[in-house]
Length: 231
Ligand SMILES: Nc1ncnc2c1ncn2[C@@H]1O[C@H](COP(=O)(O)OP(=O)(O)OP(=O)(O)O)[C@@H](O)[C@H]1O
Image (cartoon, rainbow, N blue to C red; front, side, top):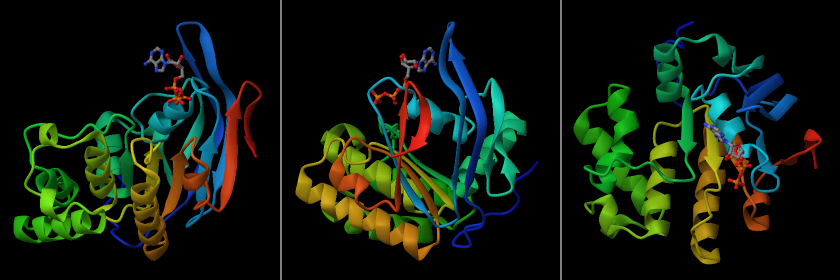
């Protein structure tokens, strides 16, 4: 199914994970896990290292196929999408903060942040204006023209966060978004996530080991050997 035109700000949906299984090389990582996040709700996903939290985010974003089960982003079944349709879904409705940032190394910070807007058809000048506004919100106004290699890990993380939020996605997937930040900067970034997610009625699924980060979520879930359950 084609996700259709961009839905900036209108936030259809919520997230349903239903009986999802995933095995890597004979190791059953996820075994029939299920959870439901209501539209506009924020969930912190906790769990020991290696239990499959990042994998679960990748499955939700359609970056990896499930072995069994289904995942609904709003009314769209991610598991039934072609690679192109999954890419369109990510572009239009999902903001993903990767653990390893994945900034484009040949684009400045502001151009990295502008990419989702440009891919969704925004005019370049408007996209750059909005990108600079968001970079200012994460405390990086003076670093907007810098290249990723010139930025510290914490600065790159904030650029990655701005890029994930700039197109006001209906679903924000964040993999340890404050992992490289000092508590004060983490506080600023978490306030921005909470404010943007609330203002656009977006759904948030955030993997974190941080109490400070988990505190902005409405609910906490835990992934462990026993599966996925509310904590
Ligand atoms: N594409 C892959 N191929 C093979 N194994 C994989 C693949 N992706 C993840 N794994 C394995 O799955 C396990 C879970 O990885 P994952 O990154 O999902 O854990 P995590 O809970 O997010 O851990 P952390 O908290 O340390 O980030 C790891 O043992 C990892 O090596």
